[in-house]
Amino acid sequence: MALTAVGLGSIIGSGWLFGAERAAALAGPAAIFSWVIGAIVALTIALTYTELGSMFPKAGGMVRYGQYSHGSLAGYLAAWANWIAIVSVIPGEATASIQYMSSWDFGWAKELYDGKELSGTGLALASVLLLFYFFLNWFAITLFAKTNTAITVFKVVVPVLTAGALMWAHFDTSNVTDHGGFTPNGWSSVFSAVAVAGIVWAFNGFQSPLNMAAEARNPGKSLPKAVIGSILIALVIYIALQVAFLMAVPADALAGGEGWGGLTFNSPLADLATAWSLNWLAILLYADAFVSPSGTGMIYAATTSRMIHGVQENGHLPGVFGKVDPKTGVPRPALLLNLAVAFLFLAVFRGWGSIAEIVGVATVISYITGPVAVMAMRRLAPGLPRPVKLRAMPVIAPIAMIFGSLVMYWARWPLTGKVIFIMAIGLPIWAWYELRKPWAELKPHLVAGAWMVLYLLVMALVSWAGGTEFGGKGYLAPGWDILVVSLIALAFYYWGVQSAWRNPTLVAVEQEMLASKQEAGAGDATAEDGREKAPAGV
Image 1: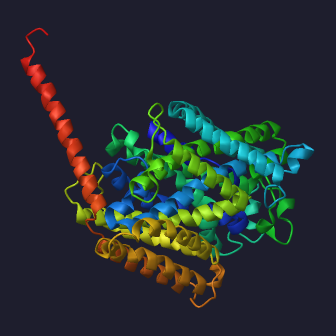
Image 2 (image 1 turned 180 degrees about the vertical axis):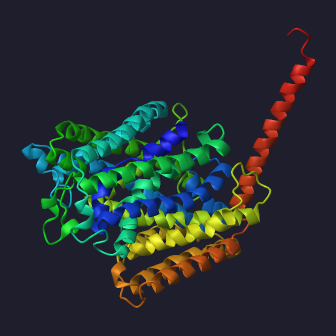
Image 3 (image 1 turned 120 degrees about the vertical axis):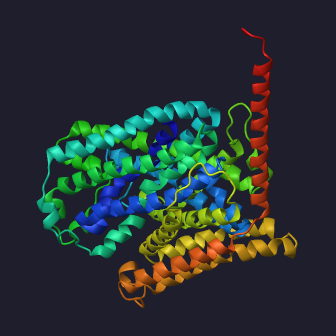
């Protein structure tokens, strides 16, 4: 239950506050399907990670699996993508809170956000929130855990209440048929909304239970329940909110020539509540605009510190980032690094929408190693205990790879190219630690990781050459582009599975797990022996 709360608390952050409007602006009423597609993508990929998470219940798990299966190059790229996707959420949550504050009925508040990005004052207030997330995790993880449970309950209640209140206040079904119909911008916009409207962001929190798997008592049972349960609960809430938003938008807001694309709400749900005289709901939403993003920001500050700890253990960061405070159990140097990077993201990407786009594509790039790694580990280490092992995984894994690749393509050029370039920025760090090794030691890592490097380059090329509806040059006709991306995904999936090897990191973790099992067995034997020798009546 605690891991489910962590997962749900991570998922329900700022995505629900903005996602309904951004998805509707792109896809109109068909945005409902965008949420369903996003949940299906998240579920298929999450299933691959639950098996990996139960096999290796270590802190920062998401940054380790690629290293275990393919060595340093693929492992580092996967860890870098995952870290970029998660650490950028922290300033995104702070930005979301300030954007909602800009709708307050005060002159100074309205100057915090200009419709596209935060002002200097807005950035300063968002920075204060970043420090709040940081210090809460710095001093006591137990305080974080207690606070998170209460915040999660609040974060679930308020969206449900919001959806119900808006449906009760105004439910105009003509919004679905008028203003361009159900799919005013075509089905391509429905797919693009999954990647760039914050939907991938909104479901991304399923990673948090995996990154905290080392703290679970029974990961074999609790991880699948936490991951799958949190996604499904969130999907129901998100669909209810999307339906409520679609029906509650005033007709005059859609009367312009742009229709759904002309929506200009700064605080979408709170603005609708005010429009229909639900002032109590608007006040509640303004409060929740701090509670929900702050709860997620605190969770991500905690999980990203464990990710940095994992990257350091992989050998790609200085040893100081692997240090854990003995009193609190918190990796404080990692917290400091994440805070610095969060400030950088806040300075460069000053609006929730721009951060959400980066998070969405980076998240998908980090996803692709899961389907490959889970089947590679079945080939490399069939004897390792798997508390979670799905019979359908040989089918689920390639489908997950296809879904992840399609979402990356749907994100539209040039965004896909920009995020892939951000992935390349991290390579010098890998090179600093790896290129000094002897060629014989380095070569197998390069060979095993080549599939991922080439995959990113090919996906960038396909995005550039793809359909115009996805920002490409139009060299691939509609329909054919989807087929091409799917075939590319399958080709790299099978290449990736076959290129995995029993690298030193995998051997080391196997030995570590074996030693832990032997120690546990010795402890059980000692306890049993003590019971046998105990005198009667004791």
